Length: 285
Image (tube, rainbow, N blue to C red; front, top):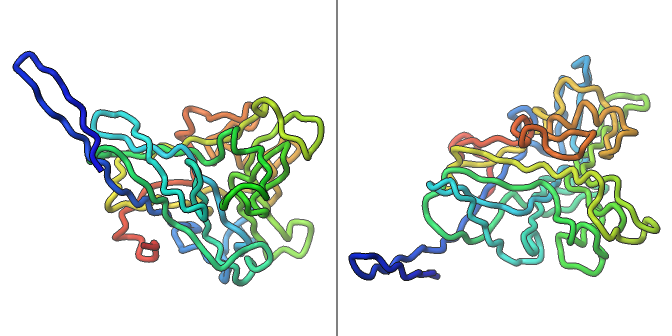
């Protein structure tokens, strides 16, 4: 498909065309550089470094995807509407496969790619949000297409969706046996948990991720759980101030727990980075 614009110049008439192209944005999940799977243990966690973890769930929503062109303009990616992994401008990246510890909440299907179209041909970076826009965050999740109908990613109408669900089991035998990280909006006001709010939540908790020097043909976006949690004490974070663990965790998302917004444009986030696909042999095609 071509979109053409007529540009009138003093020297005459010139026809300029921008080509819309298909894009396939690949993601990979790791734990400190090791492929993330549901059937293995990863050692060296908790603040003491003497705990091992196993994955129970690893999924996150991405929305408002843009590519940065050679004029430093952000060009929106128009997502394919498969109503399985992608709906509107929202995509679900899913790295659990329903095996091992992931069996309880997981599914056999995985998704590590965003598919869409973009206008232009020369790009040098990518920007996206990990979260959902307000208008889709507080809906009846049984009345909308997939991936928004996945119950494991939904809190309730009032608070909306879990933008990221990272569930872990540890080798502890005490009250720190499980380590749950659920990122979502808080301070959402409505008449009841089963009612959607009329206005945005007090703390949106939606990090915006920018990756420069990103080659859309040859690079992979790596989500490294180990980079996010290494050195932190095991504890549950449900995105609220009542969870002390969130104070340690939120800077790794680039977020301020106090405001629910990015700190320094989220540039200090620790979860995402780029890597050449030549060095990620397990990235799905």
